[in-house]
Length: 426
Image 1 (cartoon, rainbow, N blue to C red):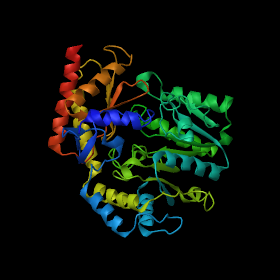
Image 2 (image 1 turned 120 degrees about the vertical axis):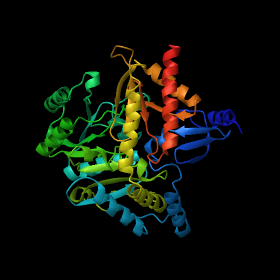
Image 3 (image 1 turned 30 degrees about the vertical axis):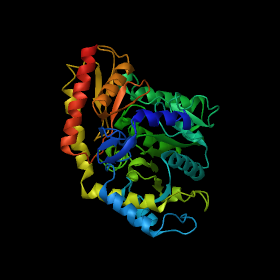
Image 4 (image 1 turned 180 degrees about the horizontal axis):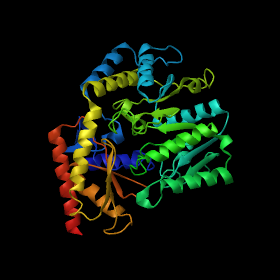
């Protein structure tokens, strides 16, 4: 079987709205390596977009799933509940930052977690407005699209967005937007467009994912918490991409000494199996009435089993520390190339949630062409990379945190050679 054969079948059978980054079709995968249908091996620096933080087919996750499959696959927790759902909720209640009693619900996707967080916030505050940030990504459902701070491709052609959603510029010094600039716009928003007494929640990614891997400045996060407390607004941390050791902590909010009222999570929680969650202050989580939350597949027992195994792996294998070690090695390697690759404008990211941004040499003009050429060159050499950012000029690195040292070293060599080749080609 050839990749081109499957690609031709795909173009005939699958909506073009489902875009793909590569034209390689996976046959099998293990830890940080993928083999395609033609037998070629690739090093995976995408991890299913931060899903398999614990690696493809981690034995402990697979064993947990197989064990659950032998018991039952689905009863719907709202009809016949099960203990492992309760156990995973208890563990998340303990792990999510915040020195207060928490409760959890399980759903299926990150977008669904965001939708439910907004529902919960509205129910708890009896308010409807939500404030999000430019460059943020919160999903492809209608509320998710409305919250997302990027039009193309997420909002194009889908008509009117959900009402009562407002956007404030995300503070990125590299692009000329300071913390003071963002706070000034927020102040004007409160004066001109929406009374803060009508705002249910702020929603923010502690590190923007699709938006370019920009970390929230510490002072800005603390000011958001202060404003939320002042006006009775809830703070929602969207940890769908940042959660589960990606930033060197279980959750990125641990870097800020600020606790969110509600936390959304998905991706890395399931180690490759669909599961998402909202965890928050118990009294807020209890605001919706019975039946107001849930879903047929929410907290599927197979996904829950995987989630419990993922938490075991993180603890037993020290993945928070491992993420910091890997991220430091990657950032040091990229920093060492700045003289040879003048297009490098910035190297950043906490833990192993890292990115490199490219501009035209000696300017602040984004260079998406260079980023895409590096991605394609690396793919030719067997390394899967993802681009991101509002301008498409950022490469983000999301390899499994369990990646073997020798495979990681091989990937860094490929990355360096790809960068040098593109510079030489001009």
